[in-house]
Image (cartoon, rainbow, N blue to C red; front, side):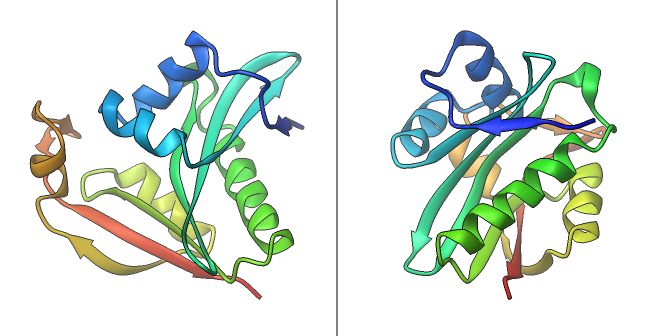
Length: 153
């Protein structure tokens, strides 16, 4: 499946629905979107994924949001979005790409490590501090964030 990944002219309700699927804190999403580079992935002119990249340090770009519509998951879209993020970072002279995910996000952890990301930090109680509602994932209460990094060549 060959995706068309580009910066959207505007973020639609469909974009926001996807962004909030990956990160249910609307205030947090709105805060980082103001400072992020946002991209959408389409296939046959249908939105299938979103990606938000935030410069966090002079040479570091963080993937602050990545989401794929549920009907299209496990078809390589997430991997293509990660590859796009890596190329974008490299092309814009970033030396490091980072991403954070929940300790209970088993599928995401597998994908990120498969794509060359390595764990470098655990942010304890991130989700209990920054989210009002308890998040249950894979029948576990989500508390901690695992941060992963990929050093770019």
